[in-house]
Structure formats: C-alpha cells, structure tokens
Image (cartoon, rainbow, N blue to C red; front, side):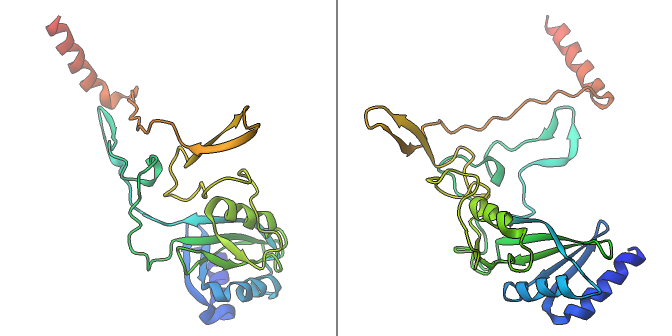
Length: 244
C-alpha cells in the first residue's frame, strides 16, 4: 500500500471511527462499507471534513450480490476444446423464462448502492458501499442532498435494480418503458424478459403479452489459433485421414 493510501485509510478510520463497518484496500483503491442508517451522515462528513473533502460524486450504481462468487463457467484450465461450458443454466447469466435462481440465504444482504467519490483538493478517490437490509424491498437513503449529481444515478439504480432511494424528489423509471415489468439488471431476471409488447390494430393500442420466444441455451463452439492446441489438431487430422 502506498503512503498516500495509508494516510487516507488512517484518516477515514480516525474521522469516521465506528461508523465504518469494513475498510478494504485493494488494487490501489479504498472501499469503505457503512450501514444504511449511517449513509447520509458518513456522506456529509466525507464531503465537509477538511481532511477528506470528497466534494464530487462521479458515479453511483446498484449491485445485485445474489449468488456472488458462484459460476458454472470453468475458466481456470483450458484444453484443446476450449473452456468448459455448462449446459444447464445454473448461473445467473443464462436464465431462461420460467427458470428460478436459488437465492440462497435471505438473511444475507443482496442489494447494495456503490458510490464513487473524488477529492480534487487532495487528489483522492474513494468507493462507498451500503447494503439494503430488506432483500424483498431494498430501501436506502438518498444522498442527493449531499451530492446533487446523485439524482439520475439513483433513478437509474431504481429502474434497473429496484432499489428504492428514500427522500429522492423524483424516483421513477429513466431507461425502461413506463409499463415495463420488473428490473432487468437483477440477476434473477430472465434474459428474454417476462413480457413482450406489440401494437394491436384492432384495439388501436399497444398490448403486453407473455413472452412467446422459445427458451433455449446456445453453447458456442470456440476455435482458437494457439500453439498449445496444434498437437490436438494434428491428431484429429490424422484420424480423419485414416477414416478416409
């Protein structure tokens, strides 16, 4: 850890003290996690304290941590046939209509708001994360009164993840259609969606119907031009010539 990061880490722990749940320094970046009830207080201190002065919110996003760290894709060891690919959609990325994702332990917080800050005065960057306590109705306080730039970012996180930001002045959808059902960035949201829409000339209006697309999972074949696979390719060519 550089002296600069070490200095900032010590200041954060001294100034915010018990309000910090965890502090992690990784990849030359600092991430602090705070409880949702302390988020606004911590945000105000980060902005106003002279030794911190994080006057600019440069990004805010939602995160869905369901099935975090689990994957069906085996990528650690590659063979001549490429990386291993699961056929059954056991991962969040390939859910089909009607599939259900095992949410695991509901007591483990699922949704978080992650805020990226910058201090121009001290040339520091910081990541601030806070989890919603209720997975069924994720609720977090808005930080729009601390950093006004959070306005549209929080609306985006609400639209895509369903995170409700308390005291936001205009919390409504920003990217999806007004009648859109669900939140498309949630990991248990099917890739083909839940409904489809079309214009009905007889009714002279747009109507919504259940998805008619046939669920299927495509497993692509990967061909690599790599010296590691030349031996396997030569053996395959020899077998082909023998069979002929």
